[in-house]
Amino acid sequence: MKFPYRLPLAGLALAAVLPADVMILEEIIVKVNAGIILRSEYERTLEQDRLELLADASLTDAEREEQLRLREKSVLRDMIDQRLLVQKGEELGIDIQAQVLRQRDEIMRRNNIESTDEFEAWVLERTGEPAEDLMDRMRENFLSQAVLGQEVSRRVVVTRDEIEEYYEAHKDEFVRSEGVRLSQILISFEGDEDAKRKQADEVHERVERGEPFAEMARRFSEDEATKELGGDIGIYRRGMLREEIESAVFGQRQGHITDILEVPNGLLILRVDQNYSEGLAELEEVQEEIRATISGPRFQPEIRKYLSELRMQSYIEIRPGYADEGAVDGMNTAWSDPSRLAPLTTTREEVIRTRRRKRLLWMIPLPKGPVDLEDSDDSTEPADETDGAAAS
Image 1 (tube, rainbow, N blue to C red):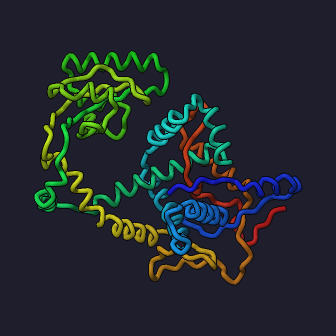
Image 2 (image 1 turned 30 degrees about the horizontal axis):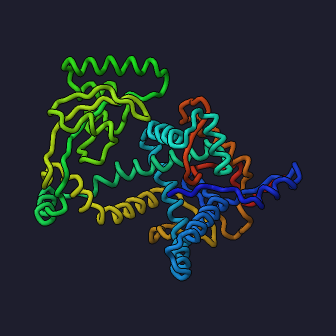
Image 3 (image 1 turned 180 degrees about the vertical axis):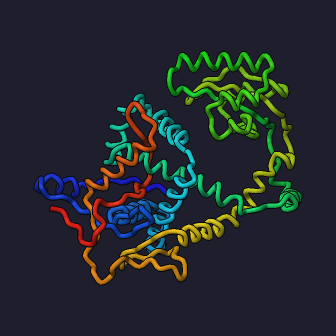
């Protein structure tokens, strides 16, 4: 879920006339273990959804109103889900920093941004917030998806018999053009580019001499998603790859190793592991595609079940007037001391300071910054969690 924050112009005008000694307060509406959800985050998310629905010309007014009504019911549930998944990912020690940096680099490449200083200015201009806030949200997305992949995927079992039965019943869906199965070694441009080019030359020479490609991929490839698979990146059909890569791998014998190919994020060495003829794809080639097709409808109920389990293991309080659509029956999420309804608040400055302190614990030092577009959050404890905490 991506909800880029755009600071309203009215807010900018107001900020310009506020006295210097007045602090803007943030109202806390949900506590999730050691984390919080702010009213401003919740309202910002709803506003972004409303703007997206208004921009969708395919909807009628009635459909748009219905979509917004449904979204209003589920937005707080999704924000709590996100907090729980991020907290679980941190508890499990899942490391997604490489994915975060790769996505930042890809955004920079697509927008012809050459430095992290330039990137920070670009993000601030487009979103009205610091690049590190966007990087935080991207980190939370990757972490949430990693938790679901690790913890939920193993609950969804598709048997070999089911795959074979589906293949036999849908063979017409699997007629394909010529294809190849490939493995890769990727040396990124992160760091000293001259040193990386020298390393790629050495690795290429070694695999050309006959050293095991899979072992060299595990040792030297910088693509975290494939290195532990010995570099295996799967099967590609005609038309799926960049033109220069297709010309380097199609028509080659099994075991062929390409020259070093320069791609936007680094230097690539490919090996042709298998060739596939035009026609009906073999079951081995499409079994993962079939597994995904069968498991898809089973996945969402398991996700909801897992998130309910996380709720049961957690401490959650929700301010009166707000509802969690994913609430677990029988679980008490009542706000502490409901007899006193003074808003639990913290200052915006304290929220920002706490987030920045946390970032120092996880961010790899960069020339200057983070990246992407997705809603901020993360567990942030106010300086004073007493009802009615006020600012001067």
